[in-house]
Length: 276
Image (cartoon, rainbow, N blue to C red; front, side, top):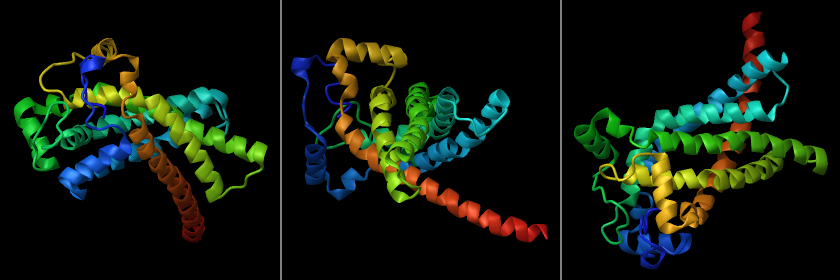
């Protein structure tokens, strides 16, 4: 949906995919269930790298900065929280960019309803190999700037919004620590992330999928898209993105909370026993 009608004026844009439900039905009808899972392997690797950095670096960075500035690592500062969220997300985006590039191209290919530039790769490894042979290492990192901006935007609000919503729900609604609180907080976080991250996500998809140098950079792509297709073009595919990011955020943050609890329990059991 982000790629259809690329750089075409409003009256001349094709609408092969009219929404998330219609899009899924068209893909399944013509390509089978396998079609909607195209690029899944790349997606797994990218998410491990992205969320490994985002969730792994956020708390250590935040504790270090608040300790240096406020002399107390437990102090909550919205500015520091957003900075650390963005920085940890940018690190993850840079680490996983080649896999997101291959995923985008694998997913955008369709022999029945082609939109945008078509790249015919047999699988993720074949895609990465072809890109490296034709464009070198630089080709594997095509669009990395857009990816870092996209993930920086999303990460700058994801964890801060989650913890902000969590504190407010505890304070004003009297909710207690547990799955219900984690679910409500992560739902609020997921919606905010989608609103903030979707415009750079559209730009990133187009830069990843391009052949040659259709776009010189992030701002050139943004300017050409808005000038040709109108401002709302940067929100193409918002509903499918929301349908993806909400369960993703809920599962990621809720499971992260439960994992942290388990790790703390293990540490409390192991460390006292080993120090005897």
